[in-house]
Length: 398
Image 1 (spheres, helix red, strand yellow):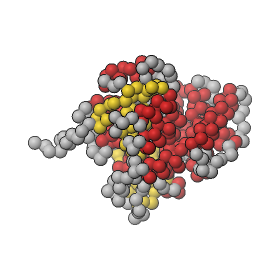
Image 2 (image 1 turned 120 degrees about the horizontal axis):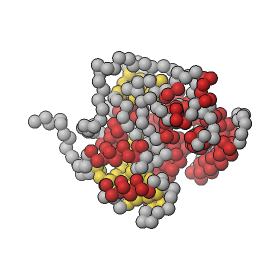
Image 3 (image 1 turned 180 degrees about the horizontal axis):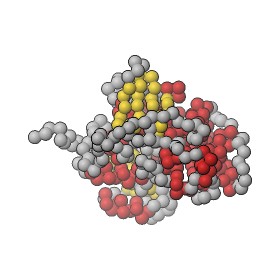
Image 4 (image 1 turned 60 degrees about the horizontal axis):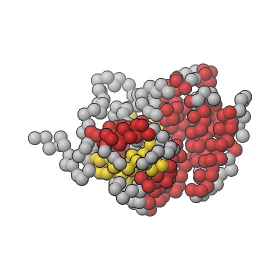
């Protein structure tokens, strides 16, 4: 008998999935369904898709439900409802798979309730990372990363003196290298980018994701947000973070040590792999539906520096992260609103970085914001961007 073919099954982990109807949420439920002896869904939350939420509830026999942006009978609603789900006593682990600003308050509620957290919401750390990451460390809560890049780094630093109580990069680490596919426009002539349509931008060459993340991947804003996220998660300065364009999306990220040696995590581009690792940590569970790399077909692994002229959003994210204070919150809010405007046809593709840059230039940063300051800055930035997106004509910076 193969003693390694099946890991011993502990008591099922009771899981709440916030953002259950989105791309990450539905894939999380696929992972859970594949391991009924390891995981049990006890709560589900969505933004507004009540029909799918109730279908999921029936499938997994869940009664604790929340709609974050809609009213419905028999379910919790709003941010308070999300926080109640995240801190519920029947929950062991919270998967934060919401998008945008809806993630950071329930993330904090889960931290304060001592829950395990699988974090797929970038904005929680981008907007309020200085508060959330510090409070998680103080309370001994590990923010298990779901992003493939951060999961890769997390896996690479295992065995390097990292304890279970935090994710701080260990001594001897020189750089964390986050890989980026480059999206669908890495070779498109710059003169043609202004004419890019939402349909073209949503056609990602290697990953299947929700609309917001897919557009952010096309502009490389997604990678910029991940740089800020890595800074918070692994407690490393921006000088030790680097982005490399890797079109094949096979190397998910790398860690370089002071002696020049590198660790990398490789695999087929499928989000169910990092999702499953975040749920099952420290186990790598079998899952027959996951793709395997065919090394006979892997001819080339390319790596290139990012073109900051082609991808100004990456530069803007890096600048916002270095400036700190409430600048990352402005970056996140402005990008969220302008991507909505682009998808609605109100703003051109190259208008995305121009409006984000304008929002950053207009902002007077608050150096050490509390949550009320972040809420205020978020609302103010969104109102400004919506107004600018409605205004015809050129968009000057500043």
